[in-house]
Amino acid sequence: MTASALRTGRLFRRDTGRTLMVALDRTLLAGPCPHAEDAAALVARFADSPVEALLLSPGLTRLAAGALGHATAPRIVTRIDYPLVADFAYHGAERHEMICTPEAAAALGADAVVMCLVSGYADVHTHGANLRAVGKAAESCARIGLPLVVEAVLWGERHDDPRDAEALARICRIAAELGADVVKTQPPATVEGLRLVVEACPVPVTALGGAATDADAAARLAELAIDGGARGLVFGRNIWARPEAQAFCATLSDLVHRS
Image (cartoon, rainbow, N blue to C red; front, side):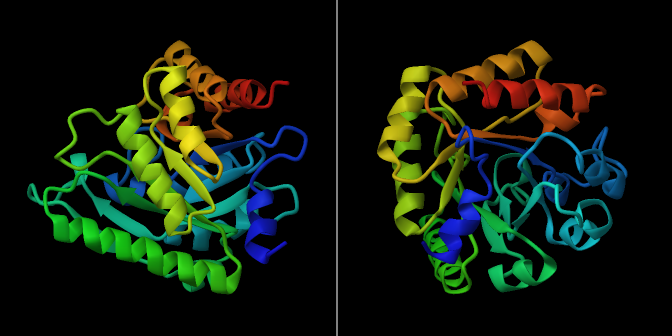
């Protein structure tokens, strides 16, 4: 077993083989959001929650030692890129930029790193740059034994449906073949669609939560993900952007790790 495989395994609970991660990296793109104005307090809220990992920006990774520097704390997955797509396109232009190297993230204390692979850029050169960036990160991660999570999504302006199962299966497979240890993606609208994605991808697939919805809708999305074969959830606003975040986090953990 390689060091990367060992560390990847630590992102998943041994008894179920699944994971619940809370994505706290949206504020890297959006700045302070409701329920996330105080960055340090946001991280501390989940230091003792029943989750396997937290997704953090490089800056929050650096600041997390006080809250997460203990044996039972969630693992840290550090975002190392800055995807300027969809709501975050810059003056209408799509770009993909790296903001941190895997080596630098590891030095900060990261247990893994995460970056995007976006399908559907208007400019083919941007798509090529994103492909090269994932490949280069995969090489670096393999060299230092750090897991790479690739967020494979259909957020480019050429895609009308970000939940198209066949297109998601394609980009998730590409992410795995570029060297991803884990894929994070937006689940299709049906269990059958997600199974198509999972069956096409030779590494664990986890489901992102997207925009905040009511608790019932978020729980239905979580159930669809698990029933469709996802190895876990990576939810952000659907956990932290609600007053009852800790209680809902426990509810999702029970759902993910049910037998």
